[in-house]
Image 1 (cartoon, protein in one colour):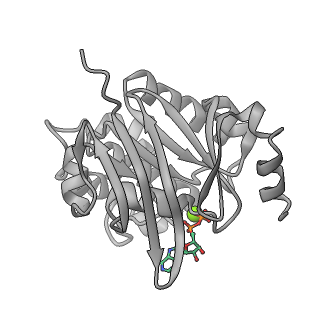
Image 2 (cartoon, rainbow, N blue to C red; image 1 turned 180 degrees about the horizontal axis):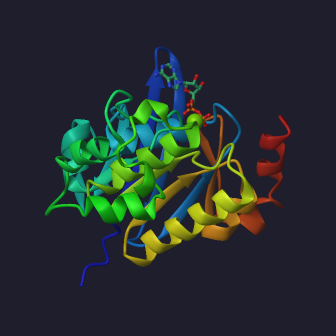
Length: 235
Ligand SMILES: Nc1ncnc2c1ncn2[C@@H]1O[C@H](COP(=O)(O)OP(=O)(O)O)[C@@H](O)[C@H]1O
Ligand SMILES: [Mg+2]
């Protein structure tokens, strides 16, 4: 048995031009664990997901997945290793049918063939499988983004603000879905502004402020932490 976490970031830094947007980020994640990532707009949440999933290479530090350094690998290689993500703004192929979108994503699967029909069912898209993706609502496109990520058989799933704009019933459905994925051993990093939603799926959060990790621990403790409170009220 290995004590190696599934994912480990070691002093990861990211700059855009002259601006440092991530400073010395270090944290780990175990298989089947759900980590919440919170922070004000522009605090570096999406950039963290972009660095882990290979959209942007880290400028400093190391990203280890199953003990192996992955920083600098292209997105498709990282996907094949078992990391995939959904996007804050959904990125499906709008001219293709829903099922075809998921089938294309499945060609990047880590191993084996994904069960496309099961994924369409669990993301609530079964009745829209033959619809053109561009005709879906934004919320349905977010679910399609998630379905596409699931089709790659991920071991680590990164979910960027999937809850915005959803009603309580839809949020409840997604919370159940995410917890079910974790129960199957998939680790998740969930970026979310909706703290009630986050509270339903995880107890452990990292709070970012201006690219720095301000806090790591329970959501309840985070809300009482002076640095966290200051970051959210702009102090
Ligand atoms: N591709 C990019 N080029 C330049 N700056 C970027 C890019 N992506 C993000 N940033 C900047 O990095 C900072 C963090 O952004 P982001 O990670 O999107 O924040 P969050 O997701 O927490 O709202 C912001 O100042 C943003 O403007
Ligand atoms: Mg973001």
